[in-house]
Length: 415
Image (cartoon, rainbow, N blue to C red; front, side):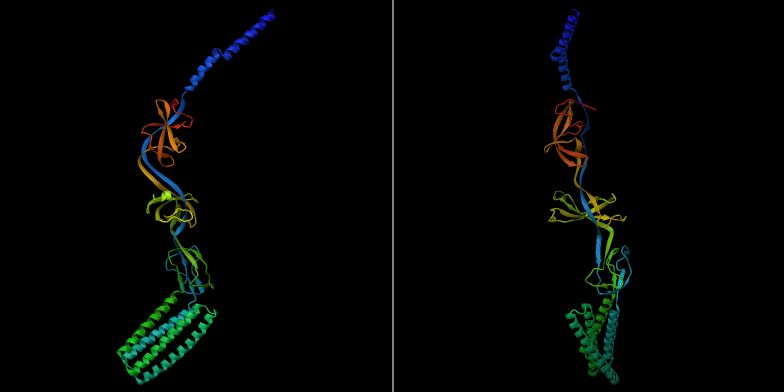
């Protein structure tokens, strides 16, 4: 009997528990709890929509190069006799870098000097008149000048044939040609002087002799100029970046013997997309950062190419940078920060408060304790702030934390 009572008690307990689970007051209590959870507030943080000045920037890669880079090209050829500088040396414009063998040009200067002195003496003699003894001396001078011209002419003919056979350089042929011209001028001057003293000087003859003096003077200046070319000088002020000659090597007018760069002022080159190019102006200040060191430099836009690069369809832009610390080197890479938009008194809010559905931007604002979706049109983007062209009012509260969890109309609690 006692076992029956215990069994009945156990069955009653099981029945009560089942009732509570399936449809009793416990289930009703859980339904009421679920409804309470549906209305539970979500804790969020907000920011206030304010007004301010916005500046949108973009970054582009740049490559640094010296503002001036000029090759060193000799104006005459020959064997290098002295090298006075080395790679890395700072030089001034016109400073001698190396010298070329000048012995043949020294002789040409002496010949030109003698021709000038002879022409001047002829003119002075004709103007003064000559004695019989002087006439004989002049006749002897004519014979000597004629013999000298014939010798040089024969030598020039021989060199011309060797040059056609590519057995001598053009420089050597030109040197003999200059000697021939000087000898011809000497002969002409001597013959003119003889004719003048024999016949007496006329105004026409005096004019010829005066012209010969000027011609000889010009030849002397030209010979001195060519002699000066044996001193190869720096074309600009700067640093010797390359020097390819040494004592005993050959220098030629057609080959660069070195390179001088002025890196006190650097230029940085970048390719700018067409969407930004019309926002840039020559003279506009920019910030440029060197990737190697992370150092920042102030620069300006120095040139904007009006034609797009055919390969990239972007526009080459040049920036000027002062390299006072000498930290920038040619070929280094960097980053330029360009201002592509500037707005004043704009409605602004943090970038991360803005959500997107396709291309539609929206935010959640707090109205009467609930989150309300508000479609907006974004403007300038500074990277941290974004401008709201419309859809918001100054002073409204925009959810800045929890915006990804809320739904439109949900109760929220601002912390």
